[in-house]
Image: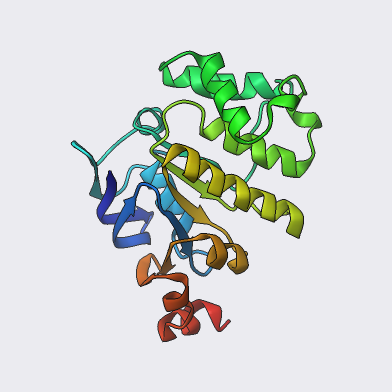
Length: 234
């Protein structure tokens, strides 16, 4: 199954954050989305996941096509995501945190879905811990567990290694690879750590000023003069 974005435009009070973006995402593939600050990376995830309604454009996945979708509707389609800033219920346990996400989908047994998600991240032993008492790195992992509870077709991950040390970043990389292997989902990864992007992604897409300026394997993108000028060279 592919997820296709066609001619996506997003404007905010005259500022064009996305300017005619066409993108195809494939299940089983990890795609890195990189570019300078303000290039439109997070905006694209927000539009794709239903946080924002695009000014123009449409999406297709399987036999479904839409131009407008809510965050909940996108999640029910299996388009799940994490955010740059950790958003947890501080008084909830780990299990309750993931259960809430599963219950929100109204699909399947919420506790079973939550347990499967926690097991995928080797997180089951922490199920009764209060979320706010976990280390920052563990909270990052909990966010991912919450995002994969229930139906999962495409996982959108925004800056999962931000604020983590090298060892914690490597743990996140291994988690994403494990999820892709176990669930067969597509993953879109935004991260400023280019070592993470270049080592884990099958394909890399580069945005600058709301437009795609390059797409290809990590090796192709790394050597693209347009990318070097707009991003890597700086």
